[in-house]
Length: 403
Image (tube, rainbow, N blue to C red; front, side, top):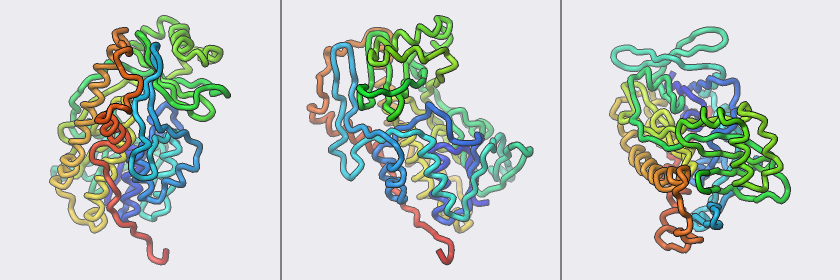
């Protein structure tokens, strides 16, 4: 086996697709039975849409129900603030597409199944690494039939912010801190509701409202570690701020019947100092857990996968050894975008989120339209839409003989 990847999220699925497309034998393990888990990141930014276009998948994905966001905005008690406009970005993708992550992952893995070198194992949970001669030579996983091994030239941990394989490799992330956790839930969308996704900020409260066509996906931010206090205060402690912040939902908050109807994301912001061992590589959240600020987690993960495929596909296809120096080249390429993006997230956390949750954020000093500030209007949309050092598909598609 040339490559085995643990974790069927955006990083793992995208890397598996590109390697299979390039003629590499690759196995992707996903510990769940399907991708249908709600309240995952679901913002597909222009940089990711461009990658999908380069793979011939953008039109297919965008046929699925989704919403487009061209101009992010923040609604405060003092009025609405226009934060940025993506309309001036180059190319056809000048918006953020909102669609469920399971649609994204199903599109990616279905495309990968067209290539004979791709294998997807569901309900397959990686739990340990195989080591031989000072290098990682594959992984061990368990499924309904028992425990198994897969030997590989390269083992990739894309198993998320709580990566088991990262721990087995002895790699420990540097924690950068976050002042909040997020309570996710949904309520029905009705005619007359706002059309666009938006951020709602008030004294002591903060919410993100994502229009999912038929329902609202809602994120209520709470102080770090505040979930138990919220639950102890009863379900009214959640219903009341929702109705106050979003009055158009006041007649629907009763549908939040209890805390079993919500999901809590413990926000982490961290990164590895070292992403690799001989024969082993971490990408996506396993290498750098992102804050939900700016909604860029999926897109950083996809960029990691594109860069990894560009650097490693040729050697994996030919059977040439993968020196650890090649893995370090990937880290060297992707670390600066990670650092800059996380630095921007920390600024937003400190200046906006932390102050808002403590009731100390005053929106009255902000201009109503930030897009009129020339420098901010140039930098903001490119950072949000394209990110730092956007990657492009450089691997060549290798089709089986006769196809």
